Amino acid sequence: MQSYIFLDLDDTLFQTLRKCALGADDPDLQVRAYLPDGSANSFATRKQQWLWDWLAKGFKVVPVTARDFQAFQRVHLPFQEEVVLNHGAVILDKQRVVDRAWVDSLVQELPAYTAQLVAVWAEVEAYAKQYPGFKLRLVRDFDVTWYGVIKHGSGQEAPLQALLNAVVKPFAGIADGSLYWHLNGNNLAILPRIINKEAAVRYLLEGYRRVHPEMLTFGAGDSHTDAAFMALCDYALIPKNTQLFSALAVAKGLV
Image (cartoon, rainbow, N blue to C red):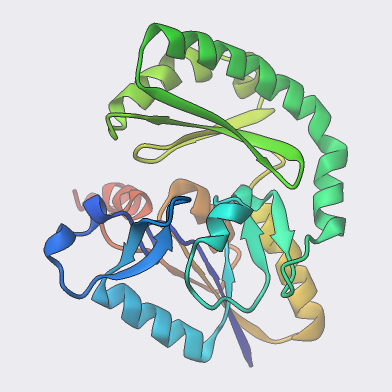
């Protein structure tokens, strides 16, 4: 029986140094990803290294990530299967060629959502001018603007939460479901509803099942936006002390 794992990357398979329990004092850390200037910024603990070694031996590993193509290129792991990028907006085949059927289907629907994104982004920019420290970026990959991401120079979630409450949540396009938001740590994303990891993983699963009628599937991820694609799989893996882990703990009354 063929086995697949759909695997989130950041905060699942590696993380920034400040999120490592021992920080720079951990002698077992391995670099997994780099910044554009070539400096190391994401690391795997010994347990994460073991996890990768185990998965690579027995599974076809499909990365499912918010990273764009350039950021994915800076991840130093030998992925061999398809890749889901940009929260599901882009799928690459094994040769790292864009899956045109998938991307073109989204591009045809995108203009109406893009108008909403541009409108809320103007309000976000106006807010950011009043309160310094915000870093705004409209994510453009393969010549298409897909979604927006906001960070804060403090590295804290609180300023993003304030912006979210003041600007994003009240926006009409959020209220009617055209757009949705995702906040996790120092990362606030605003996305068209047609862009999501769940839809991309479902698309891949349909193709895989035509080749492998019997499959064993795992999903692994750390955040709320990973839960939906993980629910498509036979089993789910959730790293401890992450957003998704904490949500489950609260639901069970464990914290």
